[in-house]
Length: 597
Image 1: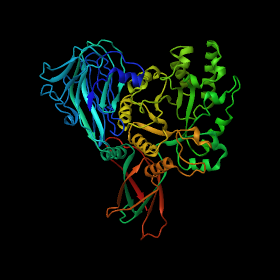
Image 2: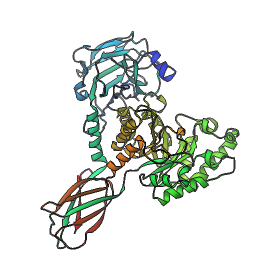
Image 3: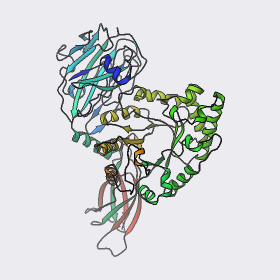
Image 4: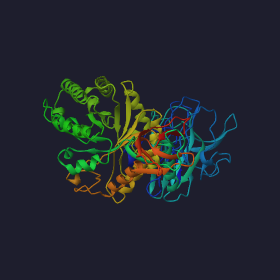
C-alpha cells in the first residue's frame, strides 16, 4: 500500500469527473477502517505561499506565512490549537508506523511518485525535510509503502509547505483495489507544476475500534456530563450518613430528535411513539415552499400550522426547514416560469411570509438550503442572493440562528464542493447577517467516522453552533451499525449542539432511505439503536447512599432532574428537590448540592 500526496489522473477522473488543476499539494490527515476505505482526512491549500500545515484528524486553520499551524488529537482527549512556529514540531505519535518520518536518515523509506524528483534538504536552523521538485505532472510527489491491518482506524498528519502560490492539497492511499481518497481542501487553484512541495514530521498512527470508542466515552464525560456531589443534611445542618439519594431525569439538555411528516397529525400511535422519545424535530416537507404555495398566490400553511401546534403541545422545539431551496430540481413549475423581476418579488414574498409566520417559534432557520451544491436563485437573481436572504430573514426574526445546511461535508471526503474550508468560506459570506449556525445534513452511505470527526473539528474553529440536521444511512445489512457509530461520534463531539435524524414515518416505507419502525411502530434495528442510545444518554433512575460524611457523588448528563432524599431511621416523608445540571467552568470539576432530608 502506498501513501501518496496526490493520485494520478485516472483517479481524479473517476471520482470527480475532471482532473484538478496542477498545483502543489498539502496533506491532510485522516483515518478510516481499512475494511472500507482508508482516507486521511484531507487538508488544505495554504493561504500564503510558505504556510505550513499539521493536519491531524482534521483540525486545521490557515495562517499567514511563514508560520506553522498545528493541530493535535490524542486518545483520551479531543482538542486542537494553533501555533506559529519557525520549524515544525515533532511528528505526532513519533511518526506512528511510518519509517523515517522526520527525514533525518535521508530519503530512507521514501520513493518518488511520478516523473518528478525528490531530495532531502536542510533548513538554516538545521531541520531536515523532503522536497518534491522538478515536477512535470500535478501528481508528482513522494510515497512510502505500508502494511496496514483491517478494522483499524488510521490517523495521518504532516507538516507541509509549498514554495509559492496557493493550491489544493490532498492525501491519498493506494491499495490493490485502487486509490482511497482522503479528501481535499481547495484554496486558490494554481496550475504551476513548478512549485515545490516541502514536507516534514509525517505520521500515520493506527487505533483500534476499542480505543476510538474509549475516546468517545471520555469526550462525552467531559462535554455532556458534570460530576455532582450531594450532601445530605439533617434539619440542624449536620451530615446525614446512610441517606438514599434517588435521581430521576425529567429532561435531557442535549437535543436529540427526528424529522416528522404530516402523517403524525392523524395517527395517535405515531404521536405517542414520537413524543415519548425525542426532544426536537424538523418537518420533512411541510414548511418547504413547494408545500405551502403549490399554486402561485395561494398560500396554505394549514398542515405546517397543525404540526407546529403538535410540537408545541408536547414541548418539542422545531427547526425551520426551509425558507428557500437552491436545488433547481425542487422548484415548482410556476416558479420556473417567472421572469427575473417576478421571481425576485416572489422570493421576497416567500421569505417575509414564512419567517414572519413562525417568528420566534423555531430554534433555527435553514435559510437557502444546499446553496453550496446548487445556485438556482443566485443564477437568476445574482450572486449575492443568499446573503440578501440571510439579511432579510435575520431582520424578520433577529433572535433565531440562521443556518447554512449542506450535505457531504462530513459524509464524503470526495466531494470538493463542500469541504470544511469551503464551508467556512461560505459562512464568512453570510456571517455578518446576524447569528449564524452550521447545519450538517449527514446523509451517509458507508461512514468514515474519523473524517467526520476531522471535519467537525475544523468547522468548530468558527465557534458557531453545529447541528447534525438530517442524519440517515443507506439501506443495507450494516445500516443500524453505521447509524450507531454516526450518532455516537456526533454526541461525543463537544462542538455538536444537537442532532436530528431524517426518518419521518410514512405508510409507504419505500419512500425513504431510513425508517426506525414498521407500520405498527415496532422498532426496526435502527429503532433499537435509537432507543438504546436514548436510554444511555437519558438514564431513567439513579440511586446511591451517602457516605459517613453525608456525601454521595455521581456523574450526570446535563439536564433537569428530580432528587429525592430518604433515610430508614427518619419517619418523615421523602423530600424532593429540583436540580438543573449544567456544564461547569474550566476551574470547576464538581457541582456541589446541599439537600436536606
